Image 1 (cartoon, rainbow, N blue to C red):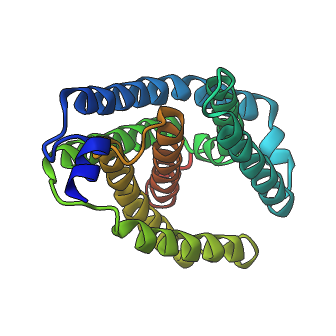
Image 2: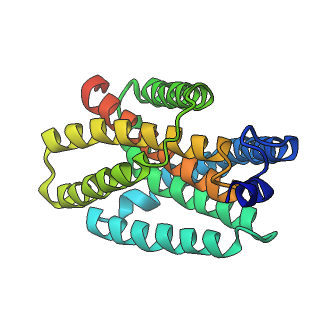
Image 3: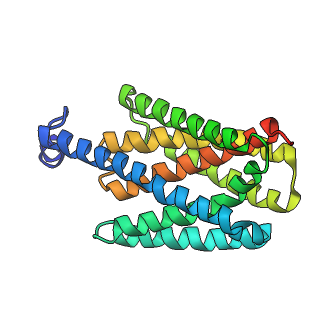
Amino acid sequence: MNETFQSVYGPAGGSASTVDERNRVLRNTYWLLALSMVPTVAGAWLGVATGLARAMSPGISMVVFLIGAYGLMFAIEKTKNSAAGVPVLLGFTFFMGLMLSRLVGAVLGFSNGASLIMMAFAGTGAVFLGMASLSSIIKRDLSSMGKFLFIGMILVFVAGIANVFIQSSALMVTLSVLVIGIFSAFILHDLKRVKDGEETNYISATLGVYLSLYNVFQALLSLLGIFGGERD
């Protein structure tokens, strides 16, 4: 059995080709993640400029988001091994930026809105760098934490949908804090999977990390808007 394991995965320490492959997937993930920020910003800018997202009611906006996001994620899964995978992923990030424009526009309504957005961006960057560093330091297998994070994500997601109708500020603050914690851990989990060779497709890896960063940024921006927004 041990011989079979080594014939498939190489020696316990990892062969040079295996290490090179993992590094290649990780490097491509980082590059594609950086590239995905461009259509996200473009989508957010277009949404703010046209007022498209703000024109929709919260209920309609949620339905459009769910249909668009899950439809595009399904398309990414189907095309991740083809040349169409990257354009589909970038189209998804543009859509996500468009959906983010509702929150961005609301924060820009504050006199210090631009600085709050930059603070949220910097905070998200700090979370990413911290989790990326931890994924390189931690040696233990973190795959088991995935199911607990998934359960937490579902609970927060359901509570978030409920709060669209409840409109509770206290619940929003609580959910934002939980989102930051859960999705920061997801970043660590997903990057560790790439480093351990459990995720070998950089498009799938990018999608997972992007969604976590998106949620962390959105939660940070919500908190900053609630506690740091200044009116003229």
